[in-house]
Length: 294
Image 1: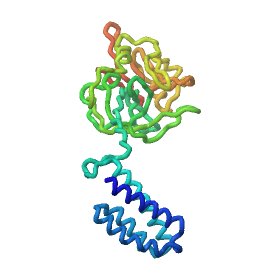
Image 2 (image 1 turned 180 degrees about the horizontal axis):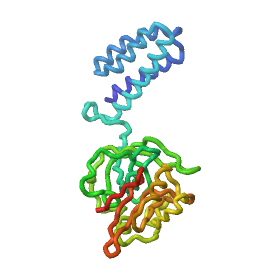
Image 3 (image 1 turned 45 degrees about the vertical axis):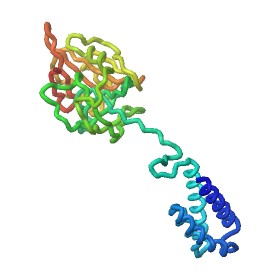
Image 4 (image 1 turned 180 degrees about the vertical axis):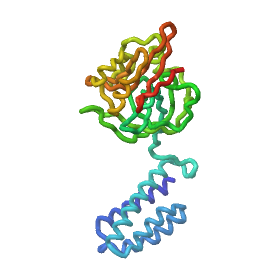
């Protein structure tokens, strides 16, 4: 192995000398590399041999420069391989072992309601990776909702893919995403549920004005909804507050996303019943249909 390394080192020196001298003045010496190429092939160094033969057979300065550069690089790489002391192909490893890339963790989304985005239906969701939470709009995922409404109760797991951004007021925006590999079940279940405390506060009969525990770029507030003052919030579809003001239901609550400016309504809930409260989610679509939360 040492002899091969020394031979490659000598060849590399010769190639560097040819490169410095110029092809026109060293064309005869370059032609002599044919014998060196044959010897390398007999040693089993076929790729290096081909690079050296290309130098010997070059017919122009441009072709010779390209061939010399490749031959020098091949010699250096092979010397590094030989220095590992293992000639078997099975034993050779990359000189720099690449870092193993961490698997991309799926996103956890808590669907809040169906949502109108200038006439297009999306889902208003809270996105969680660990304990960082933000608000996103998601194209309706390709999975069955089932007989029990998932809103405010059941998380979805999958991988978000950016689709667009939509302006939110004068200086903000909300991301519109698609969810691939959507599932109601987590691929790798975890005992950590960042939405647990959030969901407990959204139970029928327990709603109260509060700042709900989330971490991220903004904050989520639960506040009584005065349908006479809907213009104090941001809406992505101007028809929704008009339809919402016409509805007749019990106590109404708004879930708003606040980033130190005019808050945006991201979900609306209604409570009906005097003794036993029943919670419904009001979808922020045209007509504002409601649905009982399971």
